[in-house]
Amino acid sequence: MTTPSSPVPQSAPSQEEDDHDLLTYGIAGDRLREEIELEIDRLETAIATGRDDDADRNRSRIRDLEAAFSRHTSARDREFDEKRFFGEHVEDDKPSP
Image (tube, rainbow, N blue to C red):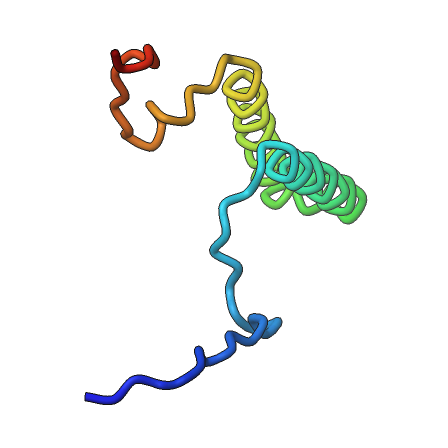
């Protein structure tokens, strides 16, 4: 079995590839706000063009996005225990004798 003498460089993901990185709370909140604004624009267009079915779907989506933003904000504001979130069980942080 042979091993390469140097690691193979990882290239940056192309624009076509999905970004599977975890979002920070700030970025996730920003994306939710942006999507709410886009959906409001879609609602206004649907109303202006008389597309009532589309307008109803837009209103429903806006309610869902606003509820998601509210949950997101609430979760962000609570104390976040990273070790517990990721399943790490740590005993007391007392130094050993």
